[in-house]
Image 1 (tube, rainbow, N blue to C red):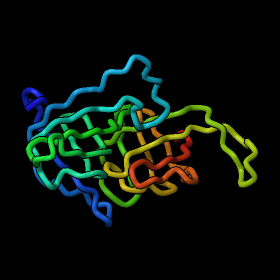
Image 2: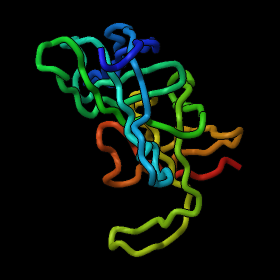
Image 3: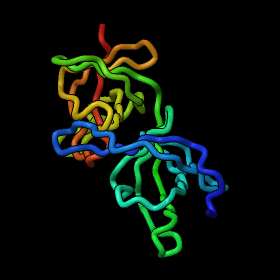
Length: 183
């Protein structure tokens, strides 16, 4: 195998239509960050640097599923049969990164999650005019589902309440939220 040693255990996860997370299996992988000289800074929950993964062929490994290896959460972007013989797969992933946080739904149990915060982000009205500056967050749907207005997030010990859903920011992987500090 060109991947070298398969030295990282990870869970293969699937997000079901009802937003329940199903663990399909755990497997051994070789996980390496792709080399790049000019990786831009993080501007959201998705890391701009891609992650290269190698593994023995398995039909359950496909685009849109996730790998959880320890604290790392990887979204599978592309899967290709490395030699065309169903022996080895070359996978490209996007790592979801952020600060450790806790999601506190108004009607459920608290859940650990990763959160990317942007303080003083421009809040625009329906005409596209900046009307205010607020804290904007991005969260992974696989970790928290789809938070609603009134739910809370706690990041670095600071509690926030979800004020609104950030329009056009839910792409099935990440959801954007507007937050207000809890006073």
